[in-house]
Length: 500
Image (cartoon, rainbow, N blue to C red; front, side, top):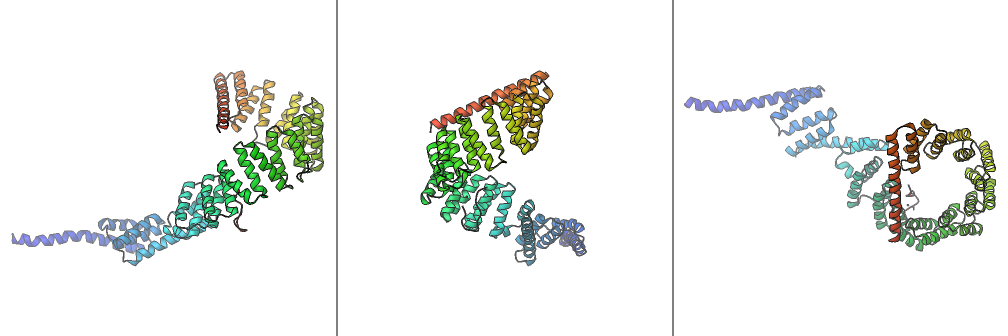
């Protein structure tokens, strides 16, 4: 009995020594392999040692070193942090973790500088607090996230940097412009609001007004632009955008006054006159549009765009000789103005003189071949005159010149249908719908073509689609009618415009 009692402690010692011996052997093997550069072989031996001694800081640190060499930075960082938690006074895990994070930080900067945004964000995710503690790196990360479309991540980082005052107005301005350029207008508004709060200069508030316009906040934009106009009454840009804001709210008298004031404030810019006369035309005030152009209020009456506008207004009024005079005057100034040739041809066509109309377009096409407007309108008129072969050639050429425009293909489909060339008609109308799925006439025409081809199920489907679109568009128009009844500048010379 006494002998058994004496053997028991010895047995317990031997049993506890077995794992320790196994741990030491695995660790010794791992260290030997690490020294020999065989990290892939060292890893399983270290993992075995770690299983036997899970709270050993030295093993955790060696695991971190091995995972680093095997290019597993996340696993390495986890092991270094475990080692620090287990033995905070050991210097090696702190140093190794620092090197690990620093490597990712510099790789992040390198990827950012070489426009590799995806790589930059991947490295940033491993760099820890180094990014958060560097305002330039943080701003760079935000910009990369915006370019990659990761607007939620960018917004979160923006708010974090704002809360710690790491974003200066100049730095945030660059971010706000980038948000606008990528159509993240709501987020851009937030940035411009903070900039204007920190520095309420006229320029910063002007930039905010543009951001509000881009985001569709027309009422708030018009209020701010009205204030800006009162501060700088002769600023034509502010007046023009104020007119746009009023127009979007369908406050047409206010829009007209703002556009008119912009034209007066900037008399040498034809765009101001075009904006004002466009709204006059939209509200059927043609005589006023003509009078404004001819009054000499601005210095642009002699420019070809204004003469072109004058011709359009005169043609709408039905004064075709006056329209021709204006279009010819525009061509005298700019012989390459395709829209003037088209306008001139239309003045004859509207009076039933199709022969003279097509002569104008033939002469223009001969002088300036390969122009979309000339080819398209020649095709329309040739088709009307029964010159279908010529029309097909011209419309096909127009389709090649502007492959995103559905109009030439629609007209080609109509010609082929009139010739009962149903396969070609089908091809053209299907192409039109691919370009513009909401074009009701194309769905209707395609339903007729399918019916002639014997595709009765498809014909029914297209007819129902046409009916659905008609109802949807009618309901949308009624909704807008009911609603009607119910109702970026430089901060310094070094800063770019906020307009996308």
